[in-house]
Structures are given as C-alpha cells and as structure tokens.
Image (cartoon, rainbow, N blue to C red; front, side, top):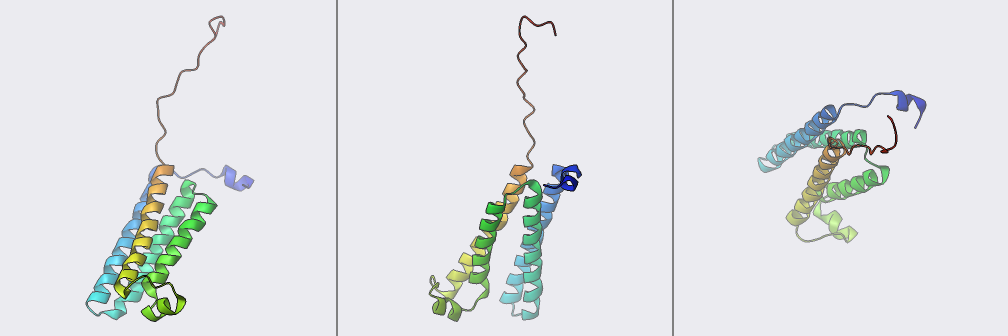
Length: 149
C-alpha cells in the first residue's frame, strides 16, 4: 500500500452499503428489462438491459473491493460470473460444440442466470459483512492490583 492510499480516509460503511444497494438495484432492473425484451420480442431492449446489468455487477464488485474483498476471492467471483455469462449469452450450438451443454437451452440459460445471481448476492453480502459495525462490548483491561494508576 502506498503512502497516498494509507493517508486517504476510508469511506463510511453507510456509503459503501449505499453503493452496494445501487449495484443490486441496477442489476435487478437490467434483469427485468432483459426478460421483458426477450419475452415480448422487443429485441432492441436487450443490449441496454445487458449493459445495465453489467454496470450493476461492476458497481457491486467495486463496492466489495472498497469494503476490503481480497484479490483471490475477487478472481473466483469473476470466474463464476464469466461462466454464468457464457451460459446466458451463447447460443445452444456453442454449448454442444464445446461439450459444456448441461441439458436443454432453457436449463443452461437458467443455470447461467443462477450463477450470475449467486455472484451478485455474494458480492453484496460480502460488502455488508465487511462493513458491519464492530461490537461495542469490549472487555475492560485488567489493572494490576498493586499499581497506582
């Protein structure tokens, strides 16, 4: 850590939690728009919905890193998110050719959405866990009975 990073004051946990909520709301809004676009054949809506969902993920990832998420866990979450994106966005022929087809197209799509949703929930939970209020119950330091202070 550089001297400039150490001197910079940390954000309050309420601000970090607010960022986390913004991330999850953007992700959910993008997911709803995506389902509307696919369900009602409004395909012009899908790229915007995907962009909004990805922005929500990036904000959630940024929030978790601000809260103190480690690099290894960040990489693991990114891998799970990437696998979820693969199962959501690729056509059925890609699964068959790669040998990663699980079942029908709908099943693989739902598995991808589940993986993406899992990473979002995990990121938000970690951001909230890492910014939790510390317990105010502290043990009193024991004073030596023979000391005068």
